[in-house]
Length: 172
Image 1 (cartoon, rainbow, N blue to C red):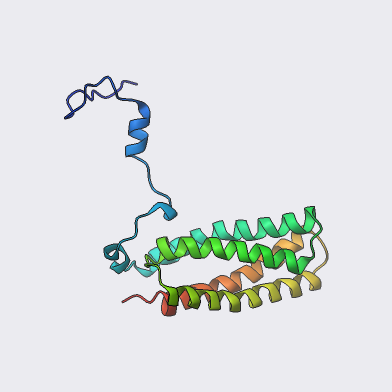
Image 2: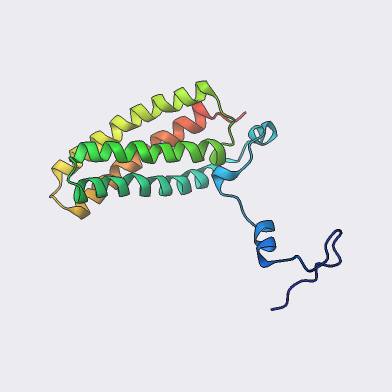
């Protein structure tokens, strides 16, 4: 594979080019790297894009949530409710940081932050309650813990998206 001739570019001798230059020019930013200006925050995304971004963020956040939960419970012997609570807090923190910026293109706001904290308080109770109830109702075991997680997480995800989309990050 040949290297492009950079000598024709203004200010370039062609001798100082490296493959890393192209990698830097073609880097696709992660959601947390995206710049956030008022112009971007004012441009509302369509519902389909928001749902897809919310779900992608949710998958990552669920991995954080359940990963922490399972490690704490099955590796370190932490009680099921405490392990789930810690996983939930870390997973939802991940979700908020990415969703505010990437899914809803929203500028930082103290009122919005407290609204999300209140929403997460409600979905925390819903998710941990459903998870704990199902964990105790189902046979003991690693796979049943994951079934309980999927049901509890799915319920919390629907509540979170609807409230964030139509109340907290309302499209203008």
